[in-house]
Image 1: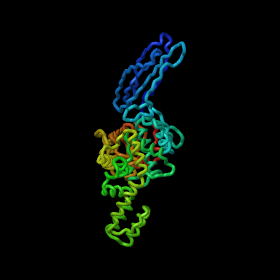
Image 2: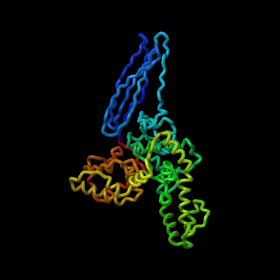
Image 3: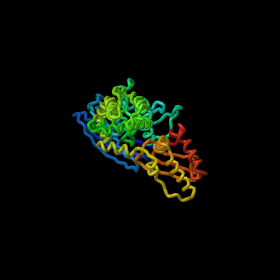
Image 4: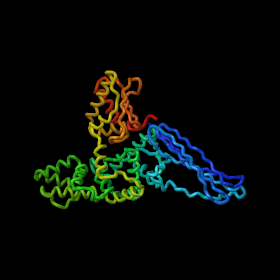
Length: 441
């Protein structure tokens, strides 16, 4: 979808065959790319055969670009040795990438291959590497048929993280609208540390999984003392299904044999040991919510907290910033429509197509709305960038909606016969499992 380039770290070794004296060489580095702006520092270090001392010269070379910025350091190390003994006369102690964090903005390009059918396993394995936070990752995705998808860059990266959390939520979490991670025998401490780093890296590139319970995240970052009983109850309503919430509220309003039977079925899954009554049910719900959202995932929260501290990364500064983020990023039909950016239609056909799109978005179910966002932006939440809408004549694009997630943008033809035709074509796209692969470079 878009392309990115960054220069790797290189090491050069040279031998001085003349006089074993110090010399230094400064070579500016230049990187040009359509997506990222790279600042490259080229450092030349030369060792003397007479005194084993290092001299270094640094020549910065900056390149600016209109889209993203990445800082890359290109280090060239030259070691001068005597021609008589051909031995290395000095050594260089440098900070390894293992010790770098993203806050230091040392981002070296690293290519990573991910398989869609095992994206959870592949990404966790990748982030188990201690040095991974010092890289600018460029993902190559292998589809279910074993073929590499076209496209590279930020759109692909966001798609990888969105897909990861969607599948991770199914296999390693429990809950409905908001989920909490669960302890499993296949997930060791190292696995959970990798997931913590995935959270950090995802936030950096514009994705944070709002399907993970905000109460769990708040507890992880600020402790349980920062969470009120009202917040815990609210988090529990998002944790259980809407139908279960209705049944619990019905019992609160009126204690009948039927409502009690349904309530016991719901609360039985949480190992309830107290007989519920209309007087104590709210207290029981608060205890169960605390158990499910804070106590049970506490082992995982402790690991995440340690990872955040080690990486010196603050994902959210305050409890309020978490609440505001979840509120702002949660997709609704109205929010998505307001997130569109388009020119005023110049023809009747363009006006009709734009009206069809707005009507289509207004009527989408929540599940289809998330599919639409994923198809167009590679995110299942409201992103930072507006969605650019292009409406073009029929012959300027392949038939059907065409999205580019790096911008993000959506290109539509202007020749739809009716809204029904538009709706059917778009729903066919959203329901196709191949619609979320990258087919254009």
